[in-house]
Image (cartoon, each protein chain N blue to C red):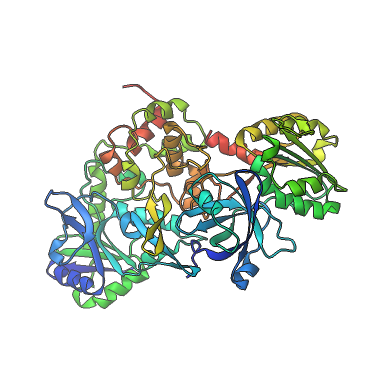
Amino acid sequence: MSNPYLPDITTIKRVKPETYDTTTFTLQFDEPKAREQFRYRPGQFVEVSVFGAGEAPFCIASSSHGRDDFDITVRKLGRVTQALHQLDAGAQVGVRGPLGNWFPFEEVGGKHVLFVVGGLGLAPLRPQIQDVYRQRDKFASVTVLYGARTPEDLIYRDELEQWQHLEGMKCLLTVDVATDGWTGNVGVVGSLLPNVKWDVSQGVAFVCGPPIMINFVVRDLVGMGFAEDAIISTLERHMRCGIGKCNHCIHGDKYICLDGPVFTCLQMKAMMELEP
Amino acid sequence: MSAYLLPWDRLEELVGRLLKAAEVIAPRRLESGDVFYGAIASPAEVAWDYRSAVEPLKRFLLPQREPILRFSTNGKLQVEPIYDEKDRVFLGVRSCDVSGVGVLDAMFGGDIEDPYYMARRRRATFIALTCQEPDEHCFCVCGDGGPFLKKGYDQQWTALGEGMLVEVGSEKGQALADSHSDLLSQAEPSHIGERLRLAKEAETRFGDFHSYIAAAMRKLSMAEVPEEVWEKGADHCVECGGCTFLCPTCSCFTVTDRREGDVVLRERHWDACMYSCYSREASGHNPRATRAQRVRGRFFHKLSLQWAQRNGRHGCVGCGRCVATCEAWGHMAAVSEAIRRGWESE
């Protein structure tokens, strides 16, 4: 009997602190068969079990390209994430997944691709950015606008440094509040939007971040002329089961875990109408 | 499907045989006079004359707390599932409760099967007992849950003058009839006639009590319910969770891990979408922070056409338990009435 609640065992390969409260864990399935079967697309998530602490959902934060392990980037916040932060490389955790739907890729081919990202929202979008950039000849252009509260809150700093100097990608950073040594932009991430010079009718925008940031950015994007079905985001809920059984993540007529977590702005609006 | 007559003087013999083969869950009258479904030890324990049971059948298929995984760390992290694989016969259970199991089947079956529910479900046999006298709060006629069933049972029994009419509704029910054919005779046309008359009469006994589910379904599905209904109505709710725990179709669960010696048991528990912590996230963000949001979410899930389409039917079978238990306003009859008419202060 197949059991969708039964995790496979993974081993933590690397532990990389991103900020004072956020860490990237690289996980690899112990069983070669599980490694092989774990085929995912950017936007999907996993449920991670920490022995004695419980299980919690995390987006997959790395592209599958050329790797047989994967990253999750975790803020120390609740019971499971605190227990996870106690673990070192070599420790084992259970993983179920991949779960949920994914970001459109082939469907947005030929378009100008814009990522508007706040804080930890870069975790779910990082694999999409990596995949889009690697196949950038399939898109008109690639732009990443990333903002965090302070410079200390920026995650994937090595990669951000690279992205800012890549051919074929425009990557701009900003912080809400500058601290010592920050010489870059100061302001909310929406303040970077005037850098978008292309025809927005030919664009698609991936937006991820705290709910308030999403609200403002979506309003700005619509104001710029983006169609509501060309604005794509990913929702978070406390998904206990991840397979549409426990009902915790229901919003309107959708399961965030099964129908999402990726939705267009148009779909989200319909959900908000049913459940404001 | 075929129909048989089980003469009254052979009923005990048949129940006795069922007891030898499986755990038999049947209505039992406690000293208090309340009737609960529970495992019986002898045929005499079955309260054949009951109207409704305090609780539905849910806990026998989805226990209030059940261990689902066992984790151990003996050098290496290991995990194994825990299944309950007991044969159970549900004997003399009410139509609404069998209909409720149908809703749970849609929830836990489907494309992604819940192996814990399905392990119990596949080993369960349902012998429904048709209702001829509704209880005080019953409205199965509004909820499409009874008083007689058209499907969903393995056997459906109706008390006639001469004995029990046994209608077969599934292969499992037929196999059961075949293996006790020495106790059964083919039903006569007169028996079928009596059953049809009883079914008709039963439907006339529901009196003035209604639940306006159709109107509520339409307004909910079209997002036409004024906020006032939720806000004012929710003021009355004390968040006891009774409506959800007693509902035969409510199946929300949460999952926790508990240490027991060297192992960790992952358990799932009933949860209630009426509780403030239900959808709260570790960050503190709560998408259903207000009680009004939770009441709306609950009734949208129960009654909207969107979810009815997804689950194969709406989520109320009209058992009346939420009406019986609610201290305030949050039960199906009151909420569907408020949705239909708009909020009217008392």
